[in-house]
Image 1 (tube, rainbow, N blue to C red):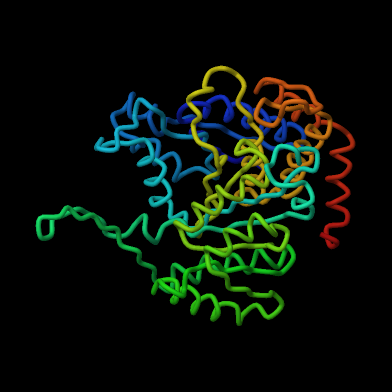
Image 2 (tube, rainbow, N blue to C red):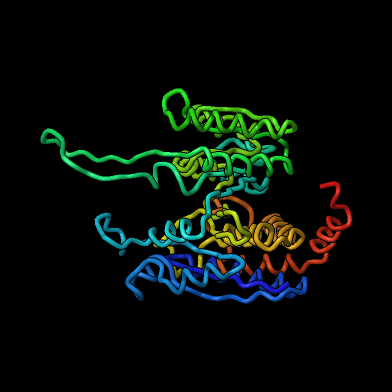
Length: 376
């Protein structure tokens, strides 16, 4: 296969972790006989400094033509003026909107070897394997907003809106993905208070009628936030609106033990998706070579799966990451005091994952999947 992948390293630690993910993708291409063509473009603060905009037209055009996009992170203190007309996150939001990326997928599956990294008791993490699907282009973040003055008092407002189409397409995706997992969808809303949530619940119930083989459960967002910590293994696929998903996915990252471990995919109607770790630009550790590249590398695995339809290659990357963690390699964020394991820099963690990718045991497991795919 030949594929064009646009790289948007961005700001802070973004260039460091994207470089390691690129190296892993290059190793995948060599191992499995593919050709990946990479194009680098600016986004976020780096683009503001160089081009005066958070996402230049030529970068957006390249993204439109690409088979997939891999992003690092945007933002940092030097661009942190909330009153600035041009801000780094405008590049990311603009890219999502321009490409019609309406669903954000964030899987959370803790590694047993890293149970001590989570503030939760290890027994609460047993069996946790959650896929959170967040609606990405509607809701409060994209509704009408503004400020005015009423009776001498300053007022600000943001509008929360959803159409039935916006709801049904993301819920339908959740049910489709649940069929390949444990066939359980939890839809999260605030239907006891908010009218858009009432529509959300109504449409979700209608979509569920097309999936008699998948269990549907409705839950209010406040109780879901509690349950995500007290009984996380009870969730399979979670689907929710934009702001609730933004908050709950950061909460769910606690289950994994570090933001540096968590990948994401933003998908739309076509095959081209945007893949990025869920962490920010972490300017406090930028250019020190200590950032954790695993979230970005696992995002690259999602890229292989969802945009390029390379399931075996995606599994190979995921197994290589798991094997590297099992072998004791740790970046600083997943090496709590007194823990066993070798604390390594960003580049060494990436190299260890590539070494395990090329390991015959991993390759054999992948080809075992190909030979027995009906079991998966």
